[in-house]
Length: 190
Figure 1 (cartoon, one colour):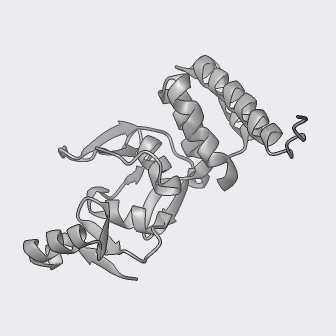
Figure 2: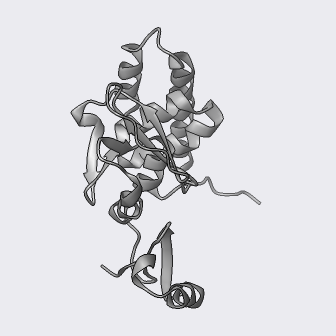
C-alpha cells in the first residue's frame, strides 16, 4: 500500500522524503508514497491511533475521512451517552451521541459515522453557511436529503433541529444550481 509511519523511520528520512516529494503526508504521523491515491481507508488509518475503543470518528473529521475536505486540526470522536468518555488528548475532542448500528461504518478497522449520519450531524452542529458546502460534498457519496429531513423531523424539539432543516433546504438549493449548471451552454451570438 505504500504506507509509512513517522515512528518507523528516522526523523531525517521522514522529513527528507516529505520535502523531496517521495512521500505525501496523509495526517499526523502517516504518509504514503507520492503515487498512492489517498482513499477514505487511508485517512481513517491515519486517525486510528487517536480513536479509542467505544468511540467513532464523527462530524467534520468524518467529512474529511469520507471526502478529503477540511482536514481536522483536532480529531472529533463520538461516544455513546452512557459510555465512558475518551481520555483527554491534545489532538482529540469528544462528544456524546446516540448512534444506531446503521450510523457507523468501518474503514481500515476504524469506526466512522456513515455518510448519512455525518451529513445530518453537520446540519445540526455547524452554522448553515459552514455546513452546506460540506454536505454538498457528501451528496455524490450517497447522502440522502429526504432521509435526513425525516430523521430531523423525528427529533423535533431537540437542539438545533430548525437550523439543520434550514441547512438541508440550502443544500437542496445548492444541488439544484449545480445540476442546472451542468446543462450545455447556449451559443454566444456576436
